[in-house]
Length: 552
Ligand code: GLN
Image (cartoon, rainbow, N blue to C red; front, side):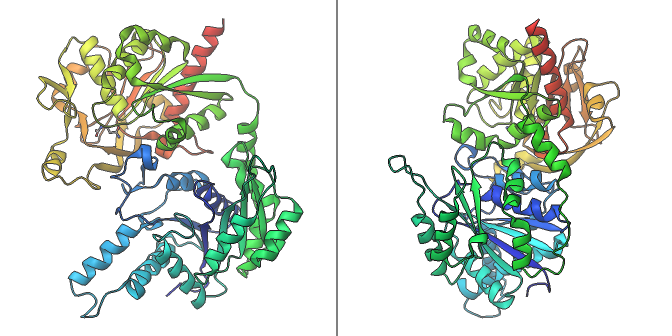
């Protein structure tokens, strides 16, 4: 049963995927939050995977790890960035989770001898999750994005659960369809028919949208709004124009130009519709995004980069956004260059890295491209180019340093060669057992763990505090047996777990290198528009210094 007075807004996609349903959901959340409402955003992923952890990021986008350690869809990252707050496990629902729960319950006689079926049992489990999320978050409004597009078989149960919720609570449930209006090249005219058909498909499920967000290359004219209004039975004021714009962070402001916030509150018969929007900080952030700024060139060296740009930006979305937030704060425009690690297998190629102001190696798995990454890291260390290593990027930085600065020639990670002589990066003891049992799903070292920072280090100065909490996703670690040797020269382990076993941050001191720092965790997951991540900011600062020096 839905909590009294709690409001639910369902966001459903029409016509085709990839038109910004996630950003629309984030933006609706942002608008309502800016009007003083307590909002939680829920992502529904209709796939049967229990979580997103086992999926290939180049095909499905980044795996976004929550504070709790739950591995979720990249949209959850957008939600956190827009709302500026941490999401909970309840905010993420997959068909896999729902079915898993219902089947387990059936096995333990939880349905007391009944025949267990999609309707009502799967549907009711979905509703239970929607309402529980509202309770756990103590929110007033839930905005729920239903993954996929109308007409998919996979998301039918979720739409059905939403429909029933509406039947039971007519004033508390709202449907928004995000649709797409193509402008076919030959015709040069915006077409509304696909949207009309999408609404009809939704109607066939017994659902009438209250608001239509019309995505297109350009803004909708009055005539098109009216046409959609008449053919889809919504008021033309409830058709919101959502043209392509430069920055996703401007979308909430753009929606507000069409008065979306108040329309939602009116339709939901909210008693508190007079709350005023406070967008001042967000607005000033967006103006920084749009301002003309000097460029800095950041190279990201990785292994997936021959699959095409479209996929890339999805697989590393949090890294890209984290770079942007710190750059905007410092008044520069980052130009991100994707460099294929394979190209650096030839050492002579590494001097191409000279032209960049900073080089970053992001997280990753497996053997491909490793030699190229190691060569690139060696080059930037020796040539004093700012370097930032994330997770695998830190492990490889330590291996490179061991091999070339300390002469431990056989330095290796267990992930590539478990039999190597010098496993300076080794599998964590509890992880070994899990891999032996082929227990892969949700079993890495996941989520938030604390670390203490050493005084006088770049890490400590950047964060400006001693105790930090960062999100993790890894199976391997700097081998505790090698820590003393690794730290015998210049390398400093500036961030260490409270029990002092796990090395969380490695760096070269300021006097030795302008910025050569790696982290075992994923700082990008906690970077926010209004609160850029301190380590990204320190990295970009170092890159700016290099860009100024190179100009002289
Ligand atoms: N493959 C490495 C590990 O499992 C690094 C993981 C990562 O970069 N997220 O420890």
